[in-house]
Amino acid sequence: MTGATVWLTGLPSAGKTTIARALAGRLRDEGRRAEVLDGDEIRTFLSAGLGFSRADRDTNVQRIGFVARLLAAHGVTVLVPVIAPYADSREAVRKRHLEHGTPYVEVHVATPLEVCAERDVKGLYARQAKGEISGLTGVDDPYEAPDAPDLRLAAHGRTVTESADAVYGLLAGKGLL
Image 1: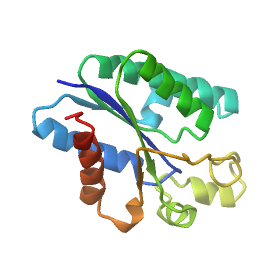
Image 2: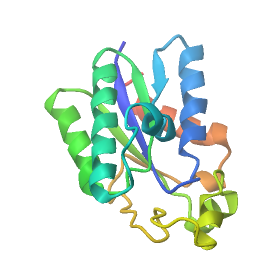
Image 3: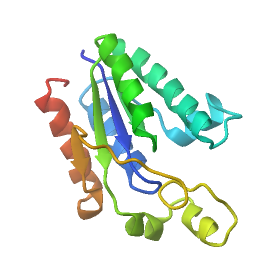
Image 4: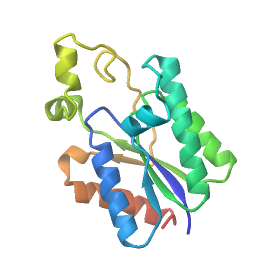
């Protein structure tokens, strides 16, 4: 089986993890090996102790990228729903995949800030508005949207299944299924 890394980038509460989990379920139902490397879970286990400075965010993204590439090189479709706010950090992960001949696709879950703030899955936008936290990506910390992702997904205008189907179609079109 062909493995690949599918990097889903976007603002907090954009729907990245929900889409990744739905797609992983579909792939597993088809007998494919699929894993989700959720950004929050990675921060708890692999990147514990890192903060949210640019350097720490870059380190976190590189660690996730390394694990994703390793799994993908062994035939796993790795779904990576991680904000990864900096374009150069995401590009370094893509480059490392290409250097090793490991397929990599980037999906920009392009949910507008207003929709993400309304969803506020983790309460981050509310906490930032109250002054309890700072450095929230897309609000008072930068988010560099991809210029040319393999797929730009307006997930807020689709169901979760439709969004997962769009990513599945991208993988199928690239011969990665």
